[in-house]
Length: 526
Image (tube, rainbow, N blue to C red; front, top):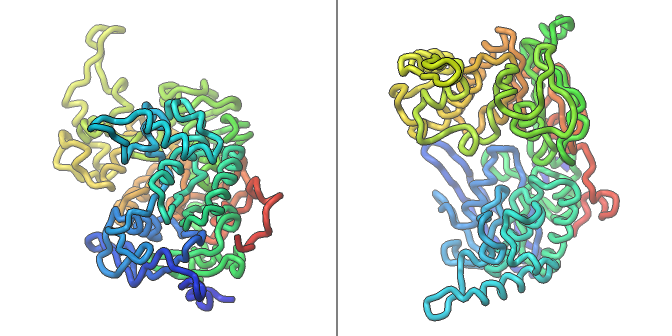
């Protein structure tokens, strides 16, 4: 069965089954950007529907429309026969936690509708409601605990319970296993099975295709802002599902750097990572990157790829292993030690980890190099950074990265996303490192900014730096000579001089998930 033949299957519920979600000819634009184009989708009451697609396919926009956070530019969305604005029966559990860590579990569960008596919060009722929602999960004892003191899988369940406290007819789960180890994920799978028995209509968003075949009866695939496939999963083998996500054309990806590196096997090693271990997430990871080489690390959320980058950059202390830069080992753990060793780092999320919004573009761009740029006033006691030095150094970085700002004093919060990312890149390069660790280097930037970043990185490679790019986005690997794919904390496979988008996606999915040994066969309807 070809993609074209299955694109209209299961577009409406079976005869006699009540539709719960109806999306008709929906378009959504943001200025010139067309985020969704003529999207039509119908989900039956009690159905578990997977919603998948590559990054940027339109999944997040569609979820925001279904929850009422956004309104369509044109088209119609109905929940239970009513408009989204009139329906109060849609809840979403997002990938990134929205719990308040300092509050109790009970307070978080009722946060949107505190019960009151006589104008005051009825604290006894708060705990009663929370315990009632938690009891079916055998977690009522958590009601009085602070969220910051409970386990990751418990936090995820609390978020589900908070959503269920609103008695939704539709529950959306966005990458529900993100950040969980395998044991916690297994526990969550058991909890989700309970939800299915309650006949709640589920929208399950995930990059993990094994989870989709485990929990969902049908799937809708978005590609390039359009619905390209809606089908029962029992009729759609995994290889066809991957083909739908990637498109029918299979373009071979090869970079101009491949032949040069194949011919220079004697090039010195710039970065060596041996037997790296981080808790239960990263297990015995080893990698060598030569000078002037860019290597990609790919993997799904929870594969361990993000922890690998953070450990190399000193943000987390590994439980074992060694790291050497230019043949010299350095002490594990600690950002200053990593910077001194010659490692520059671009974090996974620039908004949370990469910028200080209250500071200028010059201060943000040079933040890692303040010690090198400062002059001693009292040797060993006091240093001072001259404004002229700061401006001069920023000017160099701004030219290198093509940062567009009104001047060094402009607040970084006033820049576009692309220029903010360039500032984060500049900060990583301010210390003139020989190794760069880049997590999601072009996330949230437009095409022009992405091309500009790649040009700058190409120049850095030509100067002999070693670059590691960690991402799920194939476009981020444009300069990579090879890609190692991480599955469950280990290298599962390596893609060499030529690779395709489809091969990359398939490699990220290749490791079996914990439930495959004792669950129904792949593709079976649930």
